[in-house]
Amino acid sequence: MREYMEEFKLNIKTPIIMEAVFIVIAAAMYLATSNTFFIFNFLYIGTAIAVGLFMMAKNNRYTRNLIMLAVGCYLFFYVGILGHENLSLSGFWYYLSLGVFEGAVIHFLIAKILGPLLFGRGWCGYACWTAMVLDFLPYKVPEQPRKRLGWIRYITFAAALIFIAALFLAHVGNIERIMFWAFIIGNVLYYAAGILLAFIFRDNRAFCKYVCPITVFLKPMSYYSLFRVKCDKEKCISCGKCKRVCPMNVDVTDNSRKRENGTECILCMECVRNCPKGAL
Ligand code: SF4
Ligand code: SF4
Ligand code: SF4
Image 1 (cartoon, rainbow, N blue to C red):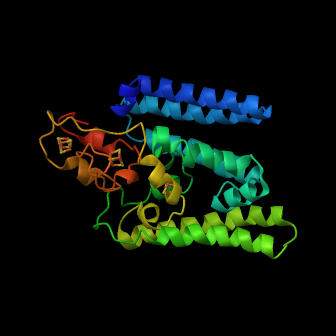
Image 2: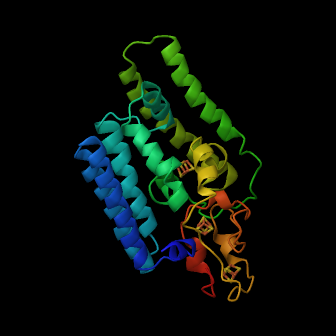
């Protein structure tokens, strides 16, 4: 099993493993909280991802976008807006400060802090409600070299923390309502910045590379990810196509964990689909 995951190949076993992982999470969360919502929630997400991975294994090109829409819209509209659950970074800090082990805290632990030890930045490739829109923009493959602007993510990360600290220090009333509107306004700003940066840098994922504060968690955790795309050096002819089609500028021919932009891999499988020798 461990060997299979380290040599990650998208085949019929992948959706079965993902479904099993989400069933275990659903059961564990139900046993820990007695809340039936978690069963519905994790079974829905796990099944959407498993069905999508099954279709991807059959080489259906647009399936990843469909998975993202299914999971991203569910989390953003159903859980976030209808359920009044702030699932963004500000919500994480807010509920963590209150010591409430629900909503955003669970979401962050599973999708963005502990989960990446298993599935890397699968969140960014299959579930994020920001990237589900950005991935439809025209620059699927970056048309400009990567910029040294990754430091911006630490500013946006700190801004969310400072925002929550300020609310507590100022003893602001009706804080739940503020958190709801923070979720809406924050995401509108993310969409606006994401679309603007995609056109400025001619790169759909520019927001992910330079601005998104969640990557402060995602990058170090995904460094240790069990799921990784690896290169069979015997088959590789060094044509460079995998790097040219990668939306995140990863050098996937280097199998070491220190590969160039290795913590940026979103497991989108574009490199695998395009490798002429089946080396990935
Ligand atoms: S980097 Fe941020 S915006 Fe981009 S896919 Fe990941 S979580 Fe979403
Ligand atoms: S696309 Fe395949 S053959 Fe070409 S460099 Fe990448 S891994 Fe090697
Ligand atoms: S193209 Fe390959 S290396 Fe690049 S993000 Fe997608 S899966 Fe990762």
